[in-house]
Figure 1 (cartoon, helix red, strand yellow):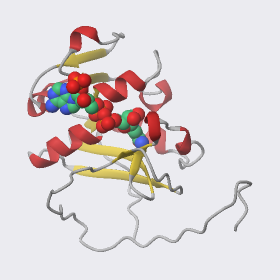
Figure 2 (figure 1 turned 135 degrees about the vertical axis):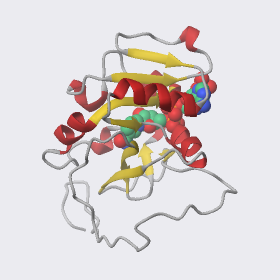
Figure 3 (figure 1 turned 180 degrees about the vertical axis):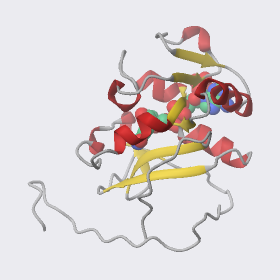
Figure 4 (figure 1 turned 120 degrees about the vertical axis):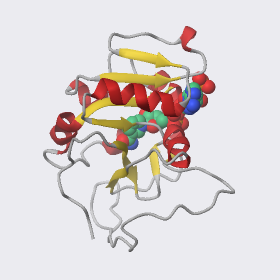
Length: 184
Ligand SMILES: NC(=O)c1ccc[n+]([C@@H]2O[C@H](COP(=O)([O-])OP(=O)(O)OC[C@H]3O[C@@H](n4cnc5c(N)ncnc54)[C@H](OP(=O)(O)O)[C@@H]3O)[C@@H](O)[C@H]2O)c1
């Protein structure tokens, strides 16, 4: 079962990621090259249209080259970066650094989003919001790759399982390719 209904813009808080089959949203050293070529037609346009504001974390911001913006620059909205030390952050136009409670950050982003969705581009912030009941949807695109290392969507050792709706398994089948993209 897959959900390919187009995303709607109605003020939701989305924890939105492309994720590897083994649950990583970034590779070692925040690498993102594994995502190249895995998107489907129209996906970027769909989220550019429905997203009003984005909240990210300081590590992701520090790993982002200057001038690089969400959705390859196609999206123009308010970007908020949560950090405990905004004073030493690299500043850019359209980016606001927040040192506040995560719930307050969501409220600020919602006001900036003008009724569209707020996207959370950070595993650690998403986990904090999930605990507070402030995530409306976990919206994932599962890329056909195994990374084995990197930053996990949900890292919470010792935590209890979080049940999700729909409450049934999602069935996917993949076959391994060799280095030249041929079936092994
Ligand atoms: N696959 C995808 O679709 C996709 C999309 C977007 C981003 N990403 C990747 O996701 C990764 C995000 O990395 P990450 O989750 O490890 O780090 P992160 O969330 O970007 O950064 C964590 C840092 O954010 C700050 N922070 C978090 N919660 C805070 C709070 N409540 N108050 C104040 N500051 C807070 C802290 O920084 P300080 O303590 O230093 O202040 C914390 O160390 C990046 O590699 C990014 O490229 C992937």
